[in-house]
Length: 423
Image (cartoon, rainbow, N blue to C red; front, side, top):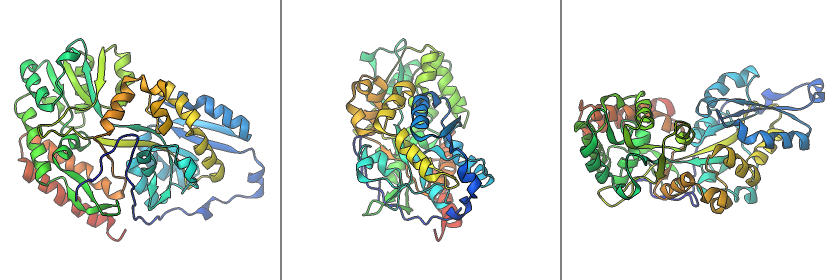
């Protein structure tokens, strides 16, 4: 069964995931009375270059709660890895931030605590963003921002009235300008995070969903007929030299970004994380939703949700939970957006002028109408490497799409069986 529900930032799907938490228990967090007499402190891990967005809110929380909050910036996608080591060592955070696709794994390993969040508080966030924080109906975080990929274009290279509205249009445009030094449209289609926008538009999917909305890790759809058709379409961009050879592999994203900032690529697919770098580089860029496919459907994308979560190792879990609810409220979310430009997950802010006047926020909201929530079950960890490897063999012509994707699914299923059976 394919992903059944597409949604905008203003709507979502109910996710019900059956996971059993295991890991560090609460009884490891005790302390003597001398510890209790000490002034309370919280250690908060924030994302890199995003701390400025919550500094004022932290100062207010410190004053209102007679607590000292230390903030440390760390790459948000790697914080769970650090928590696995720093938590047991007693040097981990009370509050961390993480992407929604890591929630299921973190819960299964017992790394983050369930939060007691009433319906009114949950109701201030978009349904999709809030659902991304739930495992088996329980809440494990509050959303801070939503993101999805979109199209960046260089206004100095292509005018708005010339912009193709379809991927086929970008293919034709690229054929007219690509010469090995300069390029038209570029995307990191050898990685499933980006390629899924094409594969799912043709009917492919990562995991199917059961009638109750829960993901079914036994139902993998990245090698079905639609996914193969999408992969065949992707392959021709590489076969015809419309993408540079150096775009393959992990270094590919750096190649794409460099070509765009140097004015050697008219358009690329990327996300809101590049707004600040491209602005600092002086690129005269515009943004819009992803193009339509030949079948009339819009390119899809993954919706990612960043959240604030409480570590299971926190010595002050109640205070940490209070901080999460405070830092993610509407007022502080708006302030954080004004500084960081990360699109907020608070529903009311979608219609706030400070957000609606942003071209980037508008593009994210429009693209989200055609996008799917990134699966947050632990089995998703087994998808990335095999899927990327298959796409790279397709891009380099070393394998045909069906054979490559069939092998990827075989590997994924084997890894799920080996690592997640009985969970």
